[in-house]
Length: 130
Image (cartoon, rainbow, N blue to C red; front, side, top):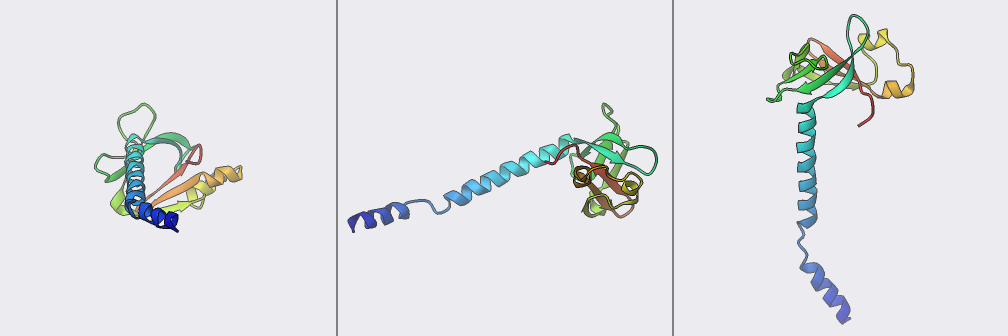
């Protein structure tokens, strides 16, 4: 019986917020990492209205106001979309740009998504699921 009361005392001394603090710290680290990925950009296969799909570096500007895309190695964006005009993200290949070039594999379908805006869409295919 004495063992049980000592076990209870030792549990009472543990910080109840310790797990929560660890979770909060992990979430904060993930948020910082994700923001840095958005700022640095990532290479996607971009599907447009004309021509064949092309690889573009897609990122978010430092003020988190616009999504921009660039030809590799260039400093000037070849297009952008205001985030305040963003309506949503749709996974899969459902827009007219994707319909012109149907997926050849189920994996290609799974790696495709569209960022839907009020005036335009950004149709992208990732190289891997991350």
